[in-house]
Amino acid sequence: MVNQERLNINTATEEELMALPGVNRPRGAEHRGVPGLHRGLQEGGGPSADPEHMSSCSGMNINTATRPQLRSIRGITEKIARNIVAHRTQHGPFKSIEDLVRVEHINCSLLDKIRFQVFVEREGLR
Image (cartoon, rainbow, N blue to C red):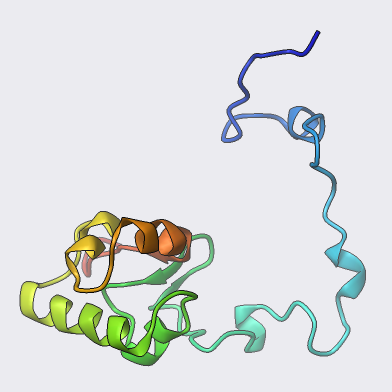
């Protein structure tokens, strides 16, 4: 009999997570020290390693990111990056990620694709 109980991944222990099918320990540690592999932001691994625009856990701040930085987000074209900056300039900072659907050429489908690559942090709320 399969256990039908749901597991909250935000509060689960490591042991509970490891019991899930398809979950195993990360194997990236053996690549540390190999040039060009698994470079972090502090090592210059991304196009926008500026801490004002990045959060170590959530992606890019859409309220402070420049057009080139927005372009580095998978799914954001030059036109969409331009529209995000224009919307932000005209209407002020975004209050939530969901506000992005108000930007021309961003629909719910695209928002779902980029949701975990971006975050909203308004200036002065740090």
